Image (tube, rainbow, N blue to C red):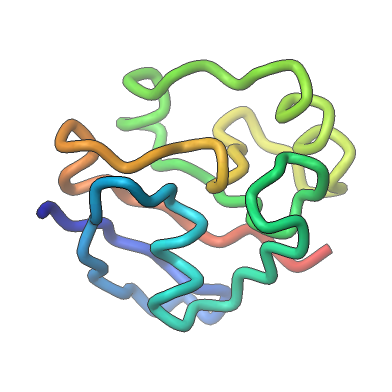
Length: 104
């Protein structure tokens, strides 16, 4: 297991344990962070929107078309915007840093 550093909306850093078989949204939600995840990871809402640290953004799989539309329509889009439900944790993500996007 690796770690993920998640910065909440109050600017507080949380060190979370990465778990194989879970996506980042599930890890954030299970840790008690304010991730609504209304759609349960189906990529039909943007309530798990995060900003990936720019040092990590290029090493992750690219956004799919549906994810791209949702982050662009969120009202808080940045070049490093991702839906955390679309990123399954793996060993290469050890040390990943992300920031929770503002609420919808």
